Image 1 (tube, rainbow, N blue to C red):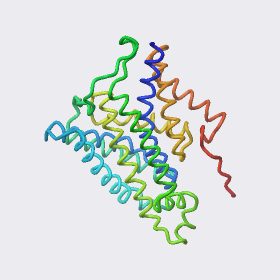
Image 2: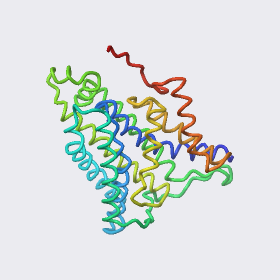
Image 3: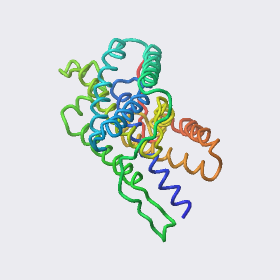
Length: 293
């Protein structure tokens, strides 16, 4: 039962990575930029939920909704102030700006909430399910996390494929100039992409801290890096690819910690990524795009 337990735990943490990776892949797929401040938006969402539930004593659902609203507004502000003026700038300028925004959010959180870790109360209250005489335990956090990731992926797939805004996002992703000529508001579309990605970051932050109940200003840094790795692994720009990459990454990380060593888990994860990119540079579900020079 040990292997099955590790597998379930790997799918659970991988589902969190998948939700974060969906934010990365949406922003890159539409705006063609890497928002490395995404991991810190996760941290802000977790702190918002923590404040609502612990300081105000409100239900966990309210905490999640407040976190989503705050992170959505934060994502729009970040895009408008930091990234919108750099529409025609080089990728290096955007990258440096993203790193600057990341450090700003981390230090602002440290000033507001302090650097001491805080104990995050899980949003899940129902008892774990025990199977095979208690040899296999499936916690409520695992069930909620996996269900949330599946629902979010399906909802995003339907949104981008069926709705007017979703089709506008796909058009901007294909050709920004042509989309603008067809009457699509490119700036508004990119802002909406950041809003959705930031709302997902809030959900991921709450689920992450429910699984690992320690909250501090650097909470989203390492999960953010792993989720970015998952997005590249699955094929950045692909919603199913982000989901697949996140789950596979979570399984690889958990199995490495269980059967090899916790010290080598990150090395093995990035080694697998390197091998995949050498064999299939576009990722597992990514598409190779031919560009004329």
